[in-house]
Length: 367
Ligand SMILES: NC(=O)c1ccc[n+]([C@@H]2O[C@H](COP(=O)([O-])OP(=O)(O)OC[C@H]3O[C@@H](n4cnc5c(N)ncnc54)[C@H](OP(=O)(O)O)[C@@H]3O)[C@@H](O)[C@H]2O)c1
Image (tube, rainbow, N blue to C red; front, side, top):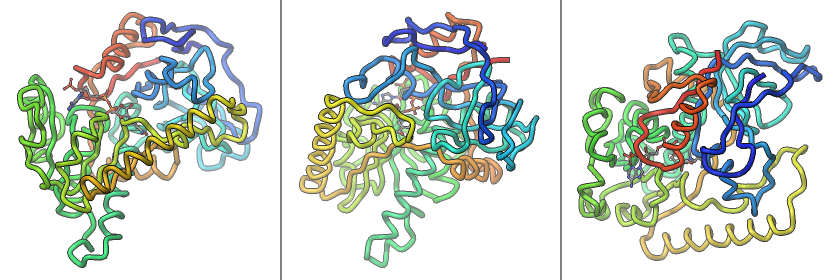
């Protein structure tokens, strides 16, 4: 099989497409998938850069790709929910989805997949799992948070609240804004760069975004939106510290892009290699920094801050299928490149590495 890997830690210029023996089923709980498409996430790029290698153990060559869509080629006797030939999409925390073949073990927590919802192409399906699960989970947590507040005016949870979700055409932002509008009827605010403003309605649908700010022109986001006017911020850029003044007292900021707590880097897989002493110390320091930021958000702004790490769970992939089925989520696919176009693959990944300019998801096809 052919796989996209980082042979050594570095930016996407080091990535290579290499040959590995095609995996075979060796356990009754495994599934072998012929991958048709895989999408790239910020997680792939950060892990392959080696930025976190001091605080978590990472394999080399580093396998790229969390999200996939493809067809089941073979499956073990204990996998009864699927059959050969089923078209599935999902998320593997172990990486390696940007390959022609993918072996998953349904016994492990790193494998989450479901049948592809009707009407989605393989490319569209591969674009969704990680970002849609992240977006749906974040909004559900916000809904639960507002429901948990004792005031009777909060019993409606996130329904009708004002939310700020920067990056309307980013992977997570594009899906989160759609869910915030269609499922929770929120007032939706976002920030994008100039060239993306005219693309919002076409990509997300009419009326999904109520107010879009060009953050390259209105650089002070708090002045542009108004201090204390927002209930929920989904921080997709890592700028949570700048966004906190936007929130009303008791508002919630959930970040997916700031420095995570160290505990979010722990690999819970029972087969994972033991962590080094240095990694454990580094994780404790990161836990401390996260706790200090949470305390500062509370005392300085009277708001709640929380970091979210997305974990693969098959029920969450099913939930994404439900959102697609209701017409509440439509995929936003930007660039698509074949696995064999190594230069194109590196270019697409490099755009993500730079964190600017991308529209929707970057998808690699492997047919
Ligand atoms: N914790 C988790 O479990 C989890 C899960 C998924 C993603 N993430 C992380 O969340 C972040 C977002 O992921 P993604 O997949 O949505 O990223 P993405 O698709 O690569 O989008 C990033 C976009 O953010 C925009 N951007 C940069 N600075 C901005 C600013 N100041 N204001 C508004 N937009 C800005 C850029 O658009 P312009 O070209 O317009 O600047 C860029 O295209 C990444 O850091 C990723 O690693 C974490």
